[in-house]
Length: 397
Ligand SMILES: Nc1ncnc2c1ncn2[C@@H]1O[C@H](COP(=O)(O)OP(=O)(O)OP(=O)(O)O)[C@@H](O)[C@H]1O
Ligand SMILES: CC(C)(CO)[C@@H](O)C(=O)[O-]
Ligand code: BAL
Image (tube, rainbow, N blue to C red; front, side, top):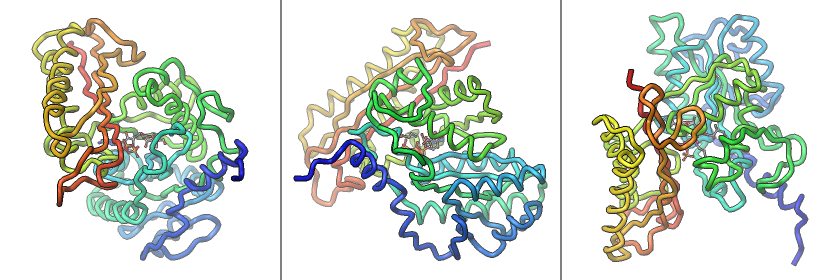
């Protein structure tokens, strides 16, 4: 058997996740690829020629490399237009679209990126199973642009999606592919101690990868504003710190968590849940609500607030454990945290003038047995699913 060198293993990992779905794009509206730019509709190319005059029919262009999107950015700058940037890993849902809608209210042009960033996944994490849905992502963005065009008809300030940046891994990591090992080599941005807390406990390279790729994306797109979802609350704290500490000239805008009708936070990974784990997984939200209720009732101690969440999480798990393998869904609570909004240090008492972040992560285990005809989700219930959620305990004035 051929032994792989460390460098070969890295480059294989990168090649296989160098948006493979992009090399086989079959999109009816995509017309041509010029200098790393894919054009959508004829009016999209006129946008590059005259950035001041998008029409109601303007759609967006797809950029695969750095120089081409920089060219567009330069033109927009000369026209005094503003760019709101929404970074994503694709598998778009209403949560992502709510970020774009907010960006459209505050900027003339929106850049969206889709890049499943390998460096934020540890070597044993779910990079290979992360959902990739290019065609439907593009369709959703086109539909949203139509909606934005309609809603902006009476408003001069309503922005549109101008660019979809979907770089290859080689474009994002032009040197040697950096390591996903904790002590591995690479050009990294590290934000400590924030990166080591909460999610960082279970995903030790996660925020190093997120900060590094966001620094790159911000350098490439030089946006006026960047948009992140409250759902990934620790990510918002890390990014705000990075922007402040590195004097990045973009404003960080946080958009509230979009939820299903019953409260489950929308997340790209939810497609793996299936009915049973979806129902039991809702405990993550119910536990947070139980804790929030304590704060709303005037309690400020960690024991009172987190105790309510822990009691619920423990009792639901015990009920599940009493069921048969074909009926139950088992989870592990990774953490339930009550932390300071800026430092993410755990607090014993919520200081009413500061408030706190209540956050948690559940690991939904694979189903042990399925029932005939059961909806077990993508991957037949075999893919473990990490759910995260949070609620902000707002300062009491
Ligand atoms: N339910 C949501 N409401 C608001 N923003 C969201 C929601 N879900 C994701 N976002 C935001 O969208 C951006 C891109 O996130 P990403 O592409 O990783 O999707 P995701 O749904 O968070 O996926 P994952 O399954 O990895 O949690 C991030 O800023 C994230 O916080
Ligand atoms: C910000 C981000 C796009 C960086 O890869 C990712 O962490 C995400 O989608 O939240
Ligand atoms: N939104 C978080 C991306 C990740 O879990 O890798």
